Length: 223
Ligand SMILES: Nc1ncnc2c1ncn2[C@@H]1O[C@H](COP(=O)(O)OP(=O)(O)OP(=O)(O)O)[C@@H](O)[C@H]1O
Ligand SMILES: [Mg+2]
Image (cartoon, rainbow, N blue to C red):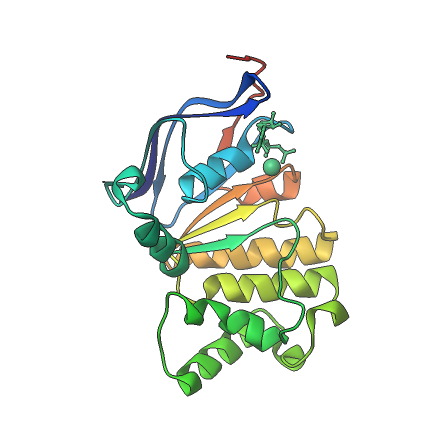
């Protein structure tokens, strides 16, 4: 089943009086349960494509559809709801709120898109932290964690609302081989639950995990 589609999607950025093309008429469809790897040189548009597919950014031309519905027809509120309840995000640098504990950080999505009772939320988040091997550190603050530990907390947070799609932008970029492997294995596990993973990476180890690899090429055109 096709979950997400990009139909001739282009994105250009205005820099001064020039327009620079980052993505040109890209067409792609993502099946449920697929582990899609986006690769290609720096500047080839991997992050741009992820941002457009996930509704964080809008294409300059073309259309993105989720379950057949164009994101362009959705209100900002609907897109925000989609991002909070159907999508999970992992970026290269783990973004955690410094003044919240590990478990409070994982609980954050429940304050936006996944309404449940407090005890239910706690139970679910403890389960998730156990799942990513972070159960002993639930009351720590982010600045006391290693990069790999932080990324696993981000991972638990990304899973909070049982996302249908996980967008991962260089999720192993700041990790050593052992921690990279842990994150990639966790990503792969999600696809067994029919969750799709779309991951941008340069990491040859990461490419190996893809059920499909799409290579983007750098565009030099200024339009
Ligand atoms: N906000 C922006 N304003 C102007 N140009 C941008 C902006 N974001 C991206 N670009 C340009 O778009 C092109 C694609 O960038 P993008 O970040 O998508 O590449 P990437 O493939 O993710 O690269 P990397 O592997 O280094 O992360 C680059 O030439 C970049 O300079
Ligand atoms: Mg990038």
